[in-house]
Length: 382
View 1: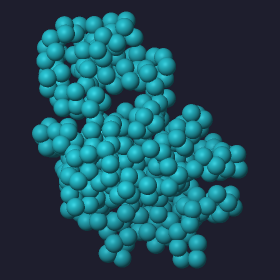
View 2 (view 1 turned 135 degrees about the vertical axis):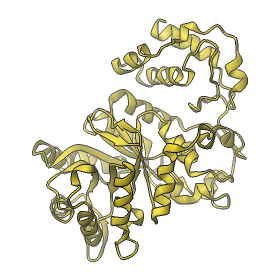
View 3 (view 1 turned 60 degrees about the horizontal axis):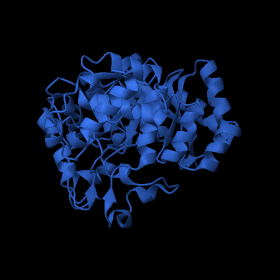
View 4 (view 1 turned 90 degrees about the vertical axis):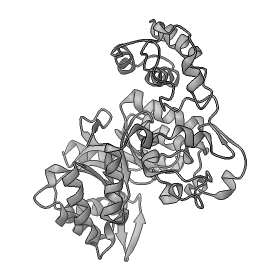
């Protein structure tokens, strides 16, 4: 298992994490099975958005005697009321829900306290000014949560939260179909068939800017809906009209700026192992570029997907990373110090480009790579 820094939190998380969707199965017995597999293969991060007390108890029992082996990302504002899930911003309900969560999980802290499901700017304003964010910050000061997060599907709302400086971790829906869609306060718009019926061109700029801003600000992204609820793995259900593999979906998400961990939902041990097998997959099995280039009605023409099909460079320049760092400077209208350091640490730099053009003949998306290298050399000075 490979591990990544979760933004600036100081936590090192496994590239593959566990979503909680399937843990309720087998009368909640699946929870222990998934954690057993996770421990065996070095998976150390999981998300718990669900508020069912039976599920939380099952996870607490599954973590017994191995709590320190896992980082918990659990959601504030997700509560259980009258036998069903409820999202709330009522501070009293949030507080009671948090206390119950710790008790059932048999722990005295959360690694990430995730403010649950905010897709509306008015809702973010209520969180920021109505007591919920203050409560999260109080919990952090007490050491009861170590870092504050937010889950969202809306890039404009997520950007607002990230720019506030209060959010250290963002849980966001990342996959190659959702990334084409504009911001919406209705999450169902992400998979509505009507939104994929016409020509779609390139990544939505709000989404790209969000990822790059998170990278520049040290906000770690944990990924939900990597497989689009499984739809992307089935040609009949996929909005793209083409089935992708699990490895392609995971690799796409992990290639986005700031992404640290893909939270893979699993309804069986076999499904969990399939996601974990990404770590041993070949470059060919992970490669998503040629599949994307063949999508009907969808085009990423001129947009760098960081797929590295341009490699190897004649001068050994890491073209994908140079382009990623260049895009980060554009998103921030300047050069963040961390980006400058990462660029400086590259063995070869954009100024070494000899304009042979071989890279552009390999790019499935028609990116003007030579132009990007010239711009990067000018921005960074070498």
